[in-house]
Length: 493
View 1 (cartoon, rainbow, N blue to C red):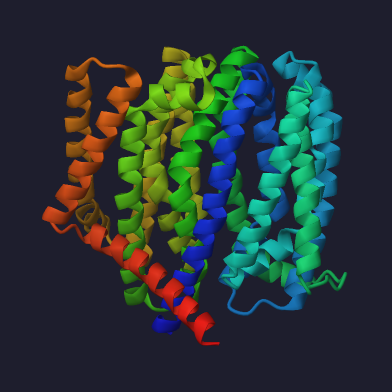
View 2: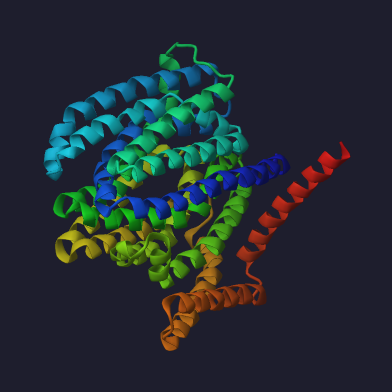
């Protein structure tokens, strides 16, 4: 089993990296181009509605997607039940949002939000129609097809958005982008999949999936609400432009921090679920996953803190410089965020969804208090500090649950992470001091700091033979080995 899972994992990482990497590239191109065509106010209006769309999407999934991946052999009846639930609840929630749209617009004192929400909310129904095919591909670790479709859709919908933004449609260009992308993705998933629903809802299947997925649903609801409450608060107490600066900082940080984490998490969950009865194997896999995540993500986040100003000027222009302080604080949260998911999915893989939900209430409840109090006392920066503190709290609790249910203790995890923490921190300090004493043009200074940081980080990693560095090389070596094997196979045939 271990060898088969290893082969599936490597293949999954290749195509998951393509999927997420392609999405990241499209996302950055989108940010760069649209930041010059749209205003902070346009992004702010969309950001104000993010919490309502995000929470609705969690309800539509219902936790069933995770339950289907966790289940060893889901049946067509399971998938059909999931499909009917998706479609029914999405129509219901769209109706709720349609009726509530005027009150939401009044809450923010932005009349245009009523029309935006009523039109943009259609994406809930559109996306729900293809959720089954998405989870089937994830269950099968078929990230090749998943990645090809999602990257193609992202690129085409970006072109449509750029056209309408260039034509002066403003915030409506972003709405059109989401609707067009949703319709195209649904069509492609249905055309490329042989699965069709039986149009039969099984109460037994629903109960079985909900016994696990129900707690996942509740956990995801709490997580999603708390992850988006900042936008609601900023949108309520500040103007759309300030909301836009925050949204740009948040989206840039998420693109940077979550890329590698999402690649690993997406592959790790089905792999760990397959090995859920073998704790020793799960610990070995977790150690490698976490090592690779830390080795690759920690230096990226520290570099972005260091080079935030030139990065924003180059990517988005001077118009977005007000986002830089927000972005630097959020990058600190990214250090913990990148490790939250792998621990969370490890607990989900062994079926401890009830325990996950209980602790989600604790960590998110405390986090909500920190964010609200931070905003009340120190304004937006206080809110962001509350977000950073919450990110580390969530990680520590998730790691504690892994220790309890799988046996990979928090002490062992910290011991495995410590070399990367020390090496990346040392690299950051030397690069920071280099820039502090140079006093050059911000672009030249940034380039020098980048080279210094990279040289020290890689040099120390090789010199001290970091285990996480070895894990990363092993993954890269496996990827290139598989690519060479396929090329040789193609040549031979």
